[in-house]
Amino acid sequence: MTGREINLSQMLERRENRAYTQKLFLDRHHSPLVSFCMNIPGPVKTNELIRRAFDIGQILLLEGLSELKAEILDVSEIHEDTGDELLLSVKNVSPEILKDMAVQIENYSPLGRLFDIDIIDINGKKLSRQTFRKCIICGRQAQECARSRNHSVPELQEAVSNLLERSFSTCC
Image (cartoon, rainbow, N blue to C red; front, top):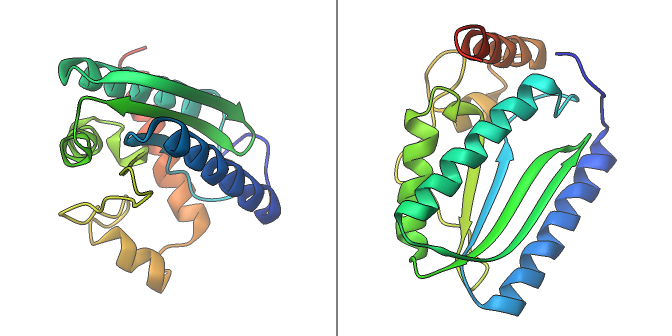
């Protein structure tokens, strides 16, 4: 996976900044949040292909929100070496319906396995999926593979690279 490598402290700082922005949006609007990032293993979190995939995910997300007649109250979009992120504060749609939409995008888009769309309710609680995500390599429960470290970071990076290359070699 080519691109700028980041370290753990950079990731932790970005995660802390994201949590701060989420709290700021919750305090300001008292509305659910949609937090969209890419699920990319290893020290490279973005590059040209990952950014293209993020842009597609963003389009799908905004189309889904439009179909639900969600009103976007606030937006934060960040593109840094730590990854691409979109945070939206929305109203007129329940967090549960937002989560259903997010899971549909993650499950049915060809790039959806790389999308990480979290829904946060007005109390700051992240909604959980009703079904587990599948491992990008073996198809088993992703959380179990991650916990037991069934696959190495290079194997995961290769699977992500292959998915990106397959997706973009046939379309764009």
